[in-house]
Length: 133
Image (cartoon, rainbow, N blue to C red; front, side, top):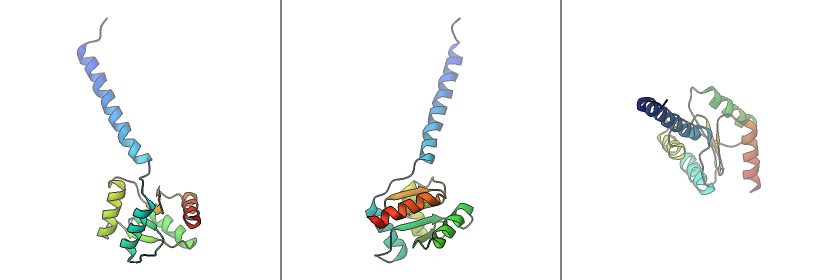
């Protein structure tokens, strides 16, 4: 027995919605990309220091993962720029430019590496790679 046109259309619509949802999820699981020159520019603009290492923590004051990342960077004595994206308009602009405004926080920029979330070992690896280049 042939399926009714309405049922086929409903299956098709559900498949389209699922495909759209999955394509949107991809942006959550992939890190934004950035060049070393861009990160140096962000660092210079946010710190006012042309020679500051291009290590930037984009964060909010209420985020527990952001606080853990800040604590980790301080404990490891890694020089970084704390860019609070709710109060600092420049930080908000660069965060939105980098992520499209739809990224979990924190976002840590280390040279040309962008790390989304609290990932201490990934941060250390990226800092070591930046220092060796």
